[in-house]
Every structure is written in C-alpha cells, then in structure tokens.
Length: 578
Image 1 (tube, rainbow, N blue to C red):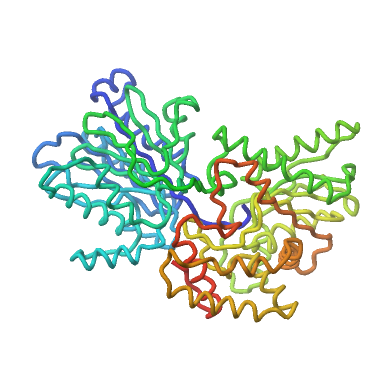
Image 2: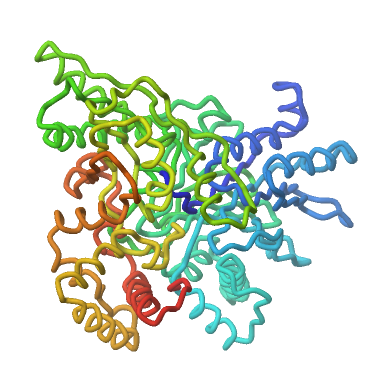
C-alpha cells in the first residue's frame, strides 16, 4: 500500500505443558518459552511498530514473590528494545521470564498514543491469584464510551478511557460477579460471555489469570484473525498462522483458526478446550487482512493474493486494447508483489497462446523513508517524492504503457506526490495503476486508521461530482439525515452515505478519483483500475468483511460511525467518528 495506514495489532499467547527440566534437556535452554514467545512476536512485527509488551506468568509462585514478570517498550524500535530489556532481567535473575505462560503484544498506535502506558498487556493485580488478570488484544470497539458510562454508574472508577482499559475493567467486573455467585464459579467462559456480549466492534482478546488459566476469545463475526495450535509440549495462539508455524515448525493443517465467538480456554493443568461464548453471527472476517495486512507467507493468503492478480488481468488487457507488445508490467513494493505474480502468470499465459511475450520487472523501488524538517514546502515535496526510486532502461519512452499494481488506494497522497511523478520520469506513453482492492468509500471503525471521510480520496471524488453536476444539495440533505439518525439507537440507524454513492455511476467515480490522483505536470496519460466487489469475493470467499468498500457494517455501531463521520466532515471537525 502506497499510503501508510495503521491497522491490526498482533498478539501471542503461549502455555508450556511440561516442567522446565524437560525443555532444558530437550532443547538445551531454560528460556525455551521466552524464546518461542519472542519468535512469535518477531514473525508478526508487521502488525505493530509503535509499542511492544511481554509478560511471563509462573504457576504456583512462592509467597512473597510476584506471579508474573512484565516488560513494555514504546522505543523507536520497540520489539528490539523489549527483548533487550527482558534479556537484562534474565541475566540479572535466573527466574525472570521463566514462567509456564507467556503473553505478548505488538501495537500500532491507532489513536496516536505512543507512551508505555498504552502498551499491552494491561494488568489488574489482586491478592487472589484467580483474580489477577493480564490482558492483551487486537481490538477496536465502537461503544467504549457507553461501556465506560455503565461501569461508572456501577461505582467503578476508570483511570483511562482507552479501549484496553475499559475492556479490562469489563472482564474484571464480570469475573468478580462470577466469583460472588452463591452457587459457585461456573467457568471462565461465563465471565467472557457476560463481558464481551456487550462489546460492539472487532476483537481478538488473549489473557491469563494469576492461577494459570489462559484464554483467547474472538468476536462473533470473526472480524479480527486468530489461530491456535497444540502439542504435548505447548499450546500457542497468534494473530497469524505463519507465526506459529515458524516458532514450532508446525504444518499448515495443524494450526487451526479460532472459531468466531468461541474462547480457547487453557486450564491451570494445561488442558485446552474450545467453549462457545458469544451468540452466532454472520462471518465477516476482515478482507483487508487478505489484501494487505497479514504477511503473504500464509499459504491461503498467498493463493488469494495471486487470485486477486488473476482477476485484474481482463481489465488491463481491455485497457491496453490487447497490445501486449508495448506493455511493461510492475508493482508498487512491497505488499502488492504476490498480486503482481498472479497478474503476470495470467498475462504470460495469454501472450503464450499468441506466440508473444510480456515484459515485466521491478520498475518501482522503495528507498528508506525520508524524514526532513525543511521549512520550504516545495523542497519537502521534492524529498518526499524520492521515497521511491525507479529502475531506468526498462520502459521505452513514448512507446510503452506502464502498468503498476498496488494493493489498494486509500488517501492517494503518496500516489499523487511520490509514485506517479517519479514513474513519469521514465517517459511512458500511459500509466495504468491497477488496485487489487475496490475503491475505499467508507470509514473503518474496526481497526484501520481511516475514521474520517476527509482522508478518503473516493469520498473527495464523490464531493467533486456532486459539486460539478449541481447536486451538492444532496450532500447537505444527507448531512441533515445523518444528524437526525444520530439521535436514534445504534440498532435503528442506517448508513446515510450509501444513498449518496448510489447516485454516481462507478465509472464516473473512478474518473473523478483519477483526476484527483493526477499530479500537476504529469506528461503520461493516466488511468486507474480497481478490483470489482464480485471478483474480490470470488478471490477471498471466506472473508466477507468488506464494509469499507460496500458500507455494509457488521455491527450496529458501524452505521453510527459513518453517520458521525459525515456530520464531522460537514461541520469541519477533524476528529475521529468513534
């Protein structure tokens, strides 16, 4: 993706099932659990580069000793700093980070908070081990404010209103209520059901109690990803399957998806069971995971991204009128690479049937990110443009059509300010940008940091069309309707923006997006192609969480968020809608 956007965090949970002496004999180290937990985090480093945390919990701690060790970092390279911090603790004391349970987290600062206090795991201490809770997760809720109000009315004081702090307190509240039952404690699944049934949003939650109980819970729609694996040596949970595969040399089929709405509960004796916690709901797993966020070394994701490239091929062939002789194909590094491979395979097949070839290569190269404090805006723009470089001598000036694959286009700023100007230096006759994703029309409230309409080039293009065609009054009417709906309960609200987009043909919207993306002075002709919704669903059939493309939000809070985003835009409030 050319525009940097923030999204999914990463979690890792590990429960060792054998005594420490077993791992020392089998693997030659007493830090086996620590090493595996760190490896699972490292293999998910794409999921969070603003903060990291790791906790290790000991079974049966001696009196006078804490039951867990915890380190967090919000340094510039937080995972490396975290490992160094833990290493110093281990060197100083042989018992540090030598527990049987480990809980790790990698954080993207979706709301811009970079301090250590915002890093997971969050902790609630108690003198009772079965009431100590360490919690980490990959989540965004749309109803955090309502949950906090409910807790406050019940007498709770919340030192923070961040999602994580509120979720922690909701679980603690349910845990205390369950322990207070005259009939006795029924099980952790009842605690999680009581707490999470009120959450509106997306979440994968991992936690451990001081008594050695561990859990992982996924939202009922399966919006956020979660995978688990077990052997006679360990139980592991992670946000991505390859992280577990790499850490434990596990085959793909052995690493299972955590079912939506269910909790994996690992008892203090190491027994792991799946328990239903949330009422069944339509599966709406986030498709952006497959397009961009998850690493492509997952076998299924790799195949899906190649299919996205296959699906783009007919549009590209039509766009160049079948002229493969004067075509050069490349991609925007790095996450579009696998999609490009799928496109290339199909193009080569078409060319071979006619005895022709297709020229291709890495025409765009991403250099190190520039950071500059130059005050002159023009000078800053020129430096920003050189975040990307090009391979010279591949494209024939004045003759070739240059096709570059990108995984998606959100804001379009990098495309307009950096990528297109530097590709234009190669002198192509035409530049075609092919997006493996459809146009992003709506804000997201389940993780992606695009909660304002102002930042979506597709919405900017919609405004352009309404203004140019004398229909801007329709936008003002939608604004009035959004304000009216915001007074209704979430369950009764509808997505006001969908009716606005329905007034504009797709081809006209894409043409307006193209005009917005075209930088001043571009010499080549420019065309933007987008994946279609039907093709996207054929390529990723199990991941129907496509609300940012369709406006079909999986939870009631989504419609409130999009209506609030429209009101914020019309009232010039530059703030998130949830």
